[in-house]
Length: 379
Image (cartoon, rainbow, N blue to C red; front, side, top):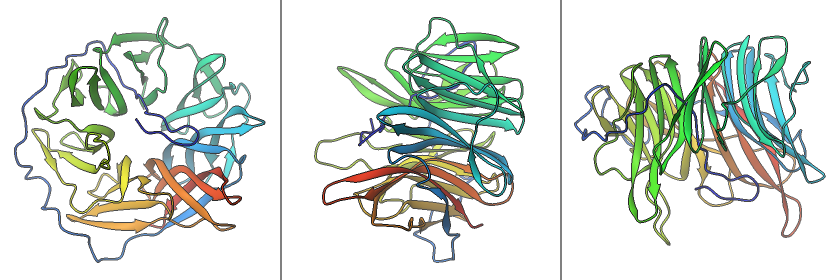
């Protein structure tokens, strides 16, 4: 579980269908589809420039981002005003980021997850003192959508495809279609941390199994349109944190090694070729990875929470079998520290990418303020 100053929480994520079959598979063969991973590449890499920072309150953060093109993206999070949390949905219109204030916008203490199918089909999930909130945007207004009856989702995330939306929390996976929810209980001890869907018949929900007195293990659930199957390698005890689907036969995940007292958890990057997983971490280091995405053409980006409390955001790019480390942009206007990226998303088909998270600004000898952060790659 991630911890920190304000809302450093373990994210329990989302995806669903009618049945869940959790049967660990012993697969760990070589992955011929991916070239050998080399040391850090020396070729030039795109820079990451700040698109928005410090415009909300001095206790704010962003948790998720979704984009469907160069002129349409959404980022969600929270800002605290007089100690009270207010959920924030920001929209990119191709020129600026602006806070959403459309008719029917439901209020909540935190907006925690967002996914978009198109500019007229966007979903957001959050919670507050009055409970949880799920909302849908049709291109003109936001409207509340009833949650599954009798379920407590807690820190859920979303995945959406045309005609369907998935929501997963700490107890169940549910799918919403044609105004009806269908829910399936998760096995006790399974905690899902990320979800992604390419279609109603191809989706992934990833995380870990953790239960008192029993050994932990990785959870890598694949939905094939009929059932969920756990294809995690036998004996794997990694805590899987994020997933990116490049194609039906190319899936990438980030993970952390098990927690051991006085030893830092290390990042791992794994690739699935449709049959087995391969460790392609290479030189990736310097951060706890909790975000991964790509352009669908072989380029993959990884980011997260850098080690330590100083320095800019840290990104790693994989292209042509070589990893390149890229430093994020430093926010001007004071001494900053503790940059963290919570989510990544491609900016449509432009070859650029969005990242969202937060950064700390030192305000005194022993005090700092936390602000929202949005950065964009230059190519």
